[in-house]
Length: 254
Image (cartoon, rainbow, N blue to C red; front, side, top):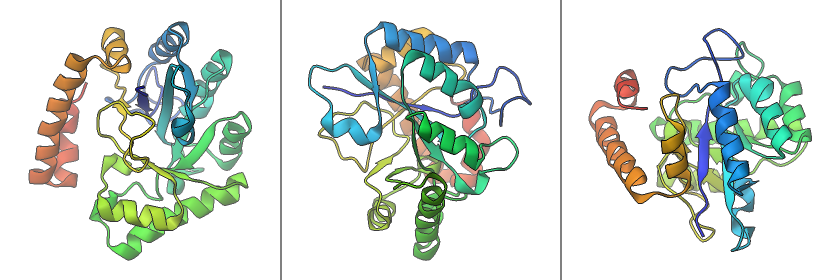
């Protein structure tokens, strides 16, 4: 059984409303509603990352995730998901809580009370593989502690900022008490896969509904060509470094 994990960020029709607009990762409300309704009509049930191990073999499951904590996660996605009876994992960058364009503690608690899963996206959104051990531990433990204080419950999931991780990041995440880690590597998961290396499908503004359906359905050609592109981008990261790579990535995504 294969379980796709979808990676979203913000939902913005135009710049300047309901959060931080990104030309690559901000999709429109119409796109989001169309995608969610297709999932529902196609028989998909939403689960959280924490439930992947327990999915019955005859269940058609999908995981919906949001990174960063954009305000539109509360103002737009929550109402759409509740209308369709869906759940999602929201990974929050804790240094961005209660600043312009991002959610505040009241809104995070509202997500939690609505049955959503609120988890960590580290503290500052710095790339974790660039950090020394002490900074890394503070990024992971500090964000976990802050969210637990806001929510009043354990935080067990981590999404890697920018998808940057590695063996040491996973080691420190385990030590901090996380039970699963999502990266940005493109692929489909199974219940037996490593919970500390969960692959995701990045949903972008340029992605049409046909490509979306193919990716969720596990179409080998669609996934294969995008994996090839991701490998090219990964090689660019290795050559350019994280900072310079970010300046050119938007030209290659879509």
